[in-house]
Length: 216
Ligand SMILES: C[S@@+](CC[C@H](N)C(=O)[O-])C[C@H]1O[C@@H](n2cnc3c(N)ncnc32)[C@H](O)[C@@H]1O
Image (cartoon, rainbow, N blue to C red; front, side, top):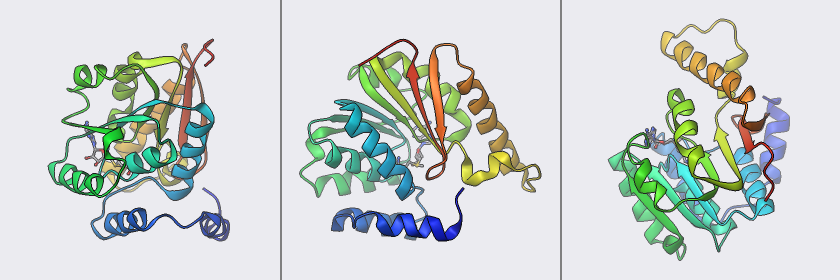
């Protein structure tokens, strides 16, 4: 997205995270768990602070890194987060237990395409953060935008997918199909009649969407 030197420069400017977050970042690296890129998460946290989001729904907990970062950045916010992978659920629960923030996080175990009613009990949400299976973004957006509070926003990560969305030739068929789906989602989102959206080339590409005509 930006050149390597500038990327390193920006990452080095980001303040050190507390030891638990640094441990989670290492854990994610070692166990190949995709967590949000640093510049992406810092941008999202700042947006959530400015927006004063009090209730946040996250689709895609993984090991709970972004959920805990949001809980720390917004100490009065309630965070509901959905994950379907059992191993990651266990890891997230272990990390949550080690903080004083766990009371603000509610983990829903299951497929986000199936547990929306459960998540709906905590609605409305000031912010919905979509960070799960990239091929299903449109479905997640359609399902969970219903639970958005007036003036709420939807943040979607990985919409530029390492810059591959702009690549013409992609060798792997699987990657090509995924890129096609993300591209379709991006075009659909940018033309959505009910939402104003912008795609920021930060981290892995972050889309910010807000329902038209609503202020908070
Ligand atoms: C990119 S990771 C989430 C990273 C996390 N938000 C962070 O930044 O720390 C995506 C996670 O979404 C989960 N996931 C994918 N599709 C899902 C679905 N349909 N329902 C629930 N979880 C899903 C995956 O198991 C994976 O752990």
